Image 1 (cartoon, rainbow, N blue to C red):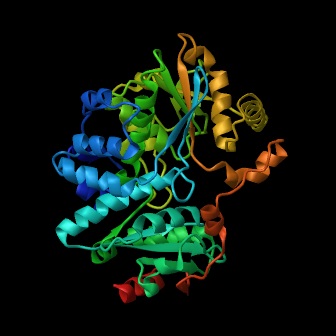
Image 2: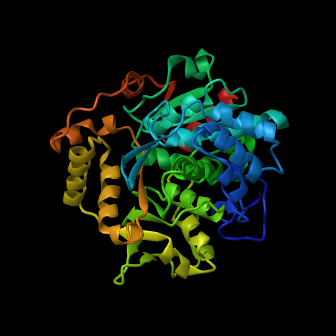
Image 3: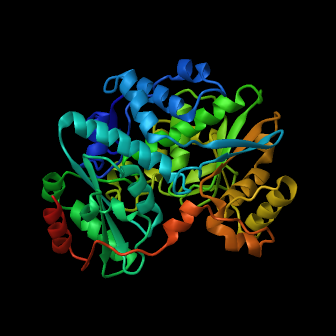
Length: 435
């Protein structure tokens, strides 16, 4: 499989190039250049297939020109000592829990897979790379866990003043690790702007072999498509009708990954999403995208530190915009509807889920005429460990959710390796000294 920019489909790059240099020079986002038919692999899988073996099989099928089956399996086994869990709430309702990684976030899957792929590629090329990431703790913890022990990767984590947390002391470069936590004398937006400034300088990108670990990097996004194949492998013998997935869009990464699964021939009938200003149901109740009248090639450049995957979503349907109306079903949900959905899940199923998953359940209820018209099934995507939202759960009448010990440790404030001003020269000096 090769990849092209959303802004220019004529210039194709390899997967290795797309994840090492994740920002196309035209300011777009890398997307798959073809619609590979993975149905033979998908239909072969069943409930006995582990998530890592599913990931290895799909990696081998998608990236066969770059990774052998043995390498694909090794990448997946290294990346995924953890797995999602699919739970059945009733005959037609399921929840896919994506928070069983080391930091309680769905991001664990994408970051860990990206790190495993990068390490293999860099080892083969005898190179090293540096990832720049802005974090308030959660993303930094994902990166620190995924990068631990990687000899060809280092991560520079930028924290706003007073927010440093999420790594172990042995992760830090000065202690023999490969993580450089930096406390920036400023706000989170100052951190974002600092990385934008670095990425506006092509010489610095080349000099320090800079990469990204957010979902602008297709290597971070692609493995999220494995979620849906994993769920299908468990559903195929208990659901005999339509299958829909429901979620809150976030930055649209999981929705795009689900649509990639559909394009790779996974049996799926649609995606339910809570509405946003960018993705909403129009007056006819059909899916609409607010910026669709602006051609992709005329958009502003993609933000390297805070990306939105709405552009990738639009690219999927660029040649036939009407198809999105048959695959994506937004539903406008307010806070009181989210609260009611949370309480219903707790009362009827004893399910303690985070507020965003409750919002997705509220969206299911509004779109149940589509889902259950032919006795279909709905799968909720639960992205974060519910203990992160324990206070809100208590307000809404649920019992207190105990936070696992490893997540408690992740919340503790720590000391940064360095404290610097929010300017490019100071950050470059850190890169220079640590090379």
